[in-house]
Length: 92
Image (tube, rainbow, N blue to C red; front, side, top):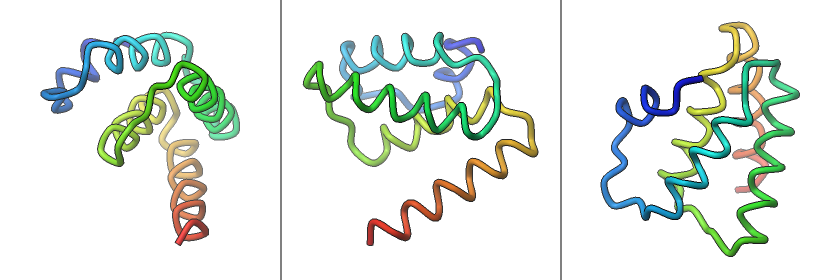
């Protein structure tokens, strides 16, 4: 996955250099796979961020999800999006 292509398509204004570096490292670790692998990568990234004291707002989390979803096939992306929506509903 090409980090620069993903972030050129996103609005990264206002995101700190530390967060951008974290997102770049995360995108480098995620190379395709399936929805289950993507969710595991997201959990790992979340744990890593928490240990480093890096927090993300909702827009930044959405961007992170888009980065991870870019590496999936259309079918796996649909599965992942369904899982994400279910998790969001459970949080409410």
